[in-house]
Length: 101
Image (cartoon, rainbow, N blue to C red; front, side):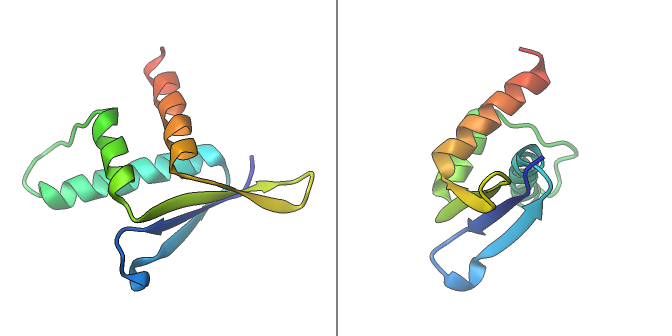
C-alpha cells in the first residue's frame, strides 16, 4: 500500500488541472478507469450500460494534456513520479489480472 497522488489535466487550460489521492497504486488505476467511464457516460447519457476495450481507454489517456501520478516510497520518504506510459502498463496488467489471464 503506497499512497498515490493522481494529477490530471484534461486540456490546455490550466484551470482544468485536478488531483486525487489514493491509498494504493491499484486504487489509483481503478480511479483512472472510473474517470474514463464517467467520460463515456457523459458522451452516451442514454445508454443503459457502457462497454469499452483497453485501446479506447488508452486513446483517452493519450488525448489528455497531462496525466501522471506520484507514488510514495516509504524507504526514501519521497514521492516518485510516473508518466502516462507507466500508468498504461500498470492498467494493462491490472485488467489482465482482473480478467483472469
